[in-house]
Image 1: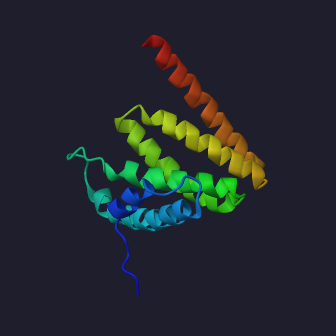
Image 2: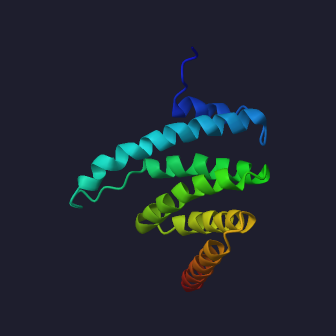
Length: 148
């Protein structure tokens, strides 16, 4: 049986593979398995009363491969698989955005992808709600950009 690679090894191997290749696809799939296991480890933090002010920084490391794999699935027309990943990615970006406003952009990109998946899957009401949320996030981002 082949030994499972760790997240860092997989991340490093991304630098040496061709973009949009089958190898890249397989690496992201392995990374997502690790990320989904990591999310389960956050259960202990739900017991935190907030005094630690703790944000799991690995959320960004979990969201990125899931987000990237969702785009590969979308290119392949596998919108149900992409949607499953995006449903996990969005809450991570929302949590990260609480602490770092720059994640609003990531949330916008993920919402746009989610709306596309929902459209393709015929889930019209959910697609409309995602587009509505996206519209308002984009307006907020533009407003804050204009102020800056």
